[in-house]
Amino acid sequence: MSSVLGSPGVTLVSLASLVVMLAASPVLTGPNEEAVTPARTATVTVGDNASLADIAREHVPGASVGDAVARIASLNDIDKIGADDGHHAGAESTRQVVIPVY
Image (cartoon, helix red, strand yellow):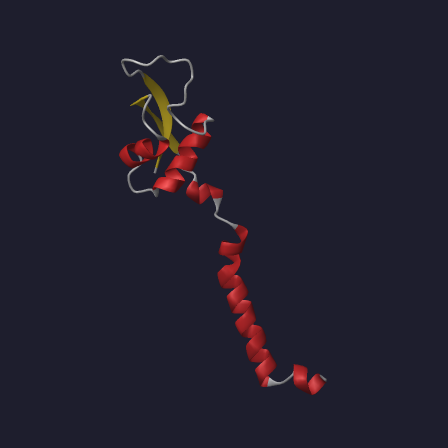
């Protein structure tokens, strides 16, 4: 048994496994919130009919739409913009939305 554990093949496999585990650790532990979460925010005015994806595309360039949508929803404690929240049909009204600044 000791001759197998001390063999060069077992040593190489062990080192390769260690390298793979270290390389995969960021994927397995998830994103670093400080790296993903912007330190600054801004407030923009959008129409009630604007979707979160519309807002993300227009006001958060350079970020993926999915990430920007998730962050905008989190910053504003909402799941979607444009839901019936008591506004009546007719002239489009506007609202203020907090967006991330990357």
